[in-house]
Amino acid sequence: MREHLDLFLEHLTLERGLAANSLAAYRRDLEGHAACLQESCGKADPRAVTESDIIRYLTDLHHRHIATSTICRKLTAVRQFYRFLVAEGTISVDPTANVQPPRVRKRLPATLTLDEVERLLAAPDISDLRGLRDRAMLEVLYATGLRVSELVNLRRGNVHLKLGYVRCVGKGNKERIVPLGRIATAWLERYLNAREDDLPFLFPGRGHRPISRVAFWQIIKHQAARAGILKEISPHTLRHSFATHLLERGADLRAIQEMLGHRSITTTQIYTHVSTDMLREVYVDAHPRARKRE
Image 1 (spheres, rainbow, N blue to C red):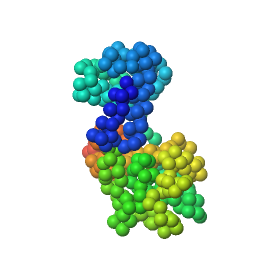
Image 2 (cartoon, one colour; image 1 turned 30 degrees about the vertical axis):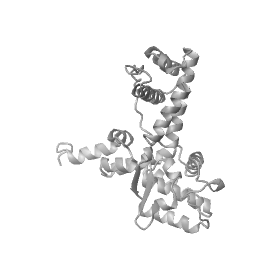
Image 3 (cartoon, one colour; image 1 turned 90 degrees about the vertical axis):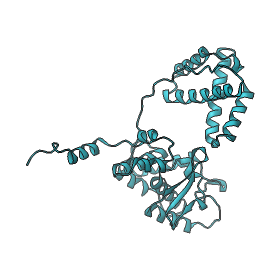
Image 4 (spheres, one colour; image 1 turned 180 degrees about the vertical axis):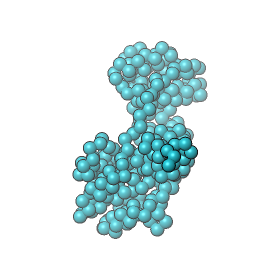
């Protein structure tokens, strides 16, 4: 099984250009699948795997109380692996072909109100360079809606302050341009002017390396506590708030999709829900029989 997994991962790297984080996720999911097959079925050769083995694998995940969304993600990785083996002629029948994924109940990610966003952005102590860095990172994240991996890997050359945009590389090594905004540009310029190093990374952490995703997650948790925000938030919360606030103010869904770097508009629709209050206001303003006659 190991040889086939390595060939598939090499295919993902060379043919599809997947990022390192995506490759690591595929490797974890497929190695877990291989281990489960070995333990439950005693099978180490993909040519011996049947549809019943795949169903047993999914059942095992369910019994271990793995989240439905995670099971679907793992099944996607496994399905692509066996499709690759069929295309390569290693196997003749895809054992996942007729296996249906479990239904996922769509949950909207947490979002912040405008007041909460303002409090969070103002929370860092900007009396030192680290505080300025944290303020600039939060401002850029809310201004652009970048993924946290995209944010922490930004370099100085990715930011064009005079023109007010950020150039980032997203999933699948696809490059996109995202507007930066006046306020975020000002804070980023202030932070860069205070730096005395020539490191290429926009937001360096320890050891002259880019700040890690885990470290930034901890920064957000810390600053949210300072701001008195009781919600459970993460870097994605600001990304979702960015999209939601744009949509509430009339931004085009396709433009939001482009800025978020989503391949499918369906993904954007999930991330950018419209509040009930906003829908009610639009209805009352627009429908001819919604208002009481004066």
